[in-house]
Length: 302
Image (tube, rainbow, N blue to C red; front, side):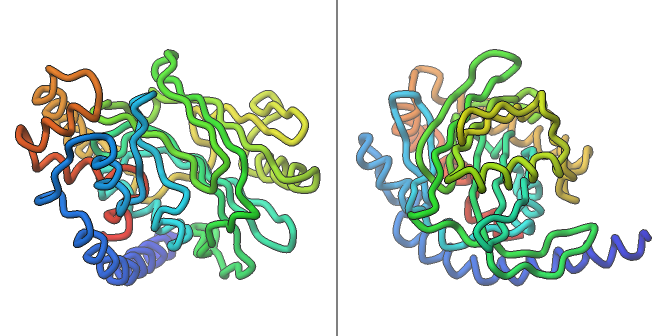
């Protein structure tokens, strides 16, 4: 049994390496558009111009960063390999994949929450495919596509940190996210209500079956019309192989040091825009950490 697990693990990292080669080419093109070593941020417009090639924008109203609907990540789809590469990139996050069948496609709606380098936050992603790979008991090898505009879903989440309201986001999207810069969190400190409005009754029932198969009971799900609300606290599904206690501890120490350094350097400012503008002179090396939130390029490079 252990030999089988090891064989699967070796295959996982081999395929990650192949994906990394392809993504590195994209990375070089993206970085050439907006290089954090030379680009100067002076206001909200220039900050969002700086963030756009990385797939993100900043909302000063709630002081959060979020993913753009036309982000380059939309072309990459989703694979479980991406989650396997997250922890080695200092993204210590809980994952909750929900698989179901609808409209002759295999769908995946996945939830995430935790620490993304120098940011804390959460995500909801929607994906589907008509080509399911041969999976094993240990790993889902399927590569999913991101939905087209006709299959976007209305989604919301309200995230609590240590039972205090931390952030909320809502939009019609394929990848709803929210990230708080300079905030350090352990994944178990974060819990929230994640809400997805399905397209019709058939999709609703299929998704509810997927939740049941993932281990959710009726008292953890609330349904109103076509909208399902899920309490996401401790994950019920198997976490990535790379989520190991000792490794998590080392990565989180690094993440906390980054957050502490960022907050110390920018302590005179009260919002992320002013902090980032100041950071260009106070700690320009930290700007690289800024663009590593969520599904950054580094998720695809191991």
